[in-house]
Length: 123
Image 1 (spheres, rainbow, N blue to C red):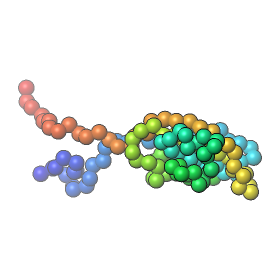
Image 2: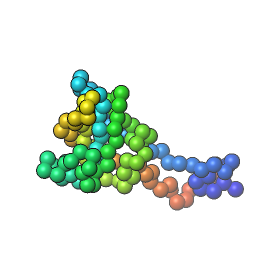
Image 3: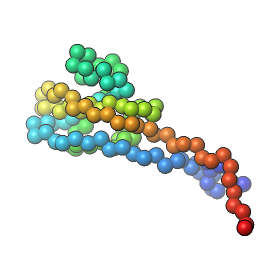
Image 4: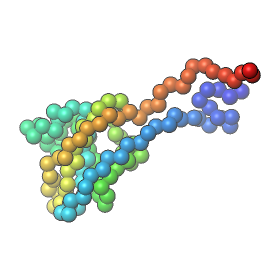
């Protein structure tokens, strides 16, 4: 008997989760980039933002490209649904970082529940 959420062979079924791509234009002097994320826009305020040590912000270095696919390339990205603020900085060869380019958007990596019941009928 096939149970909801299982294949006939016993494997698990997972809902379709739409991925998100965060991208930015390259900077000629940049050797890498840092991506910062927070639910609190105030974390990026110039009086509070302290790059990798800002409370309430998680970060990820990116080298050799100008995009990252969430959640595939950053599994630590917050799973709680909501609007997130994403800051992107350019880093040079000695580790200096630019001010962040800031954008925001809704993120949700959970599928809705399936219909509770259903069936197939002859008409």
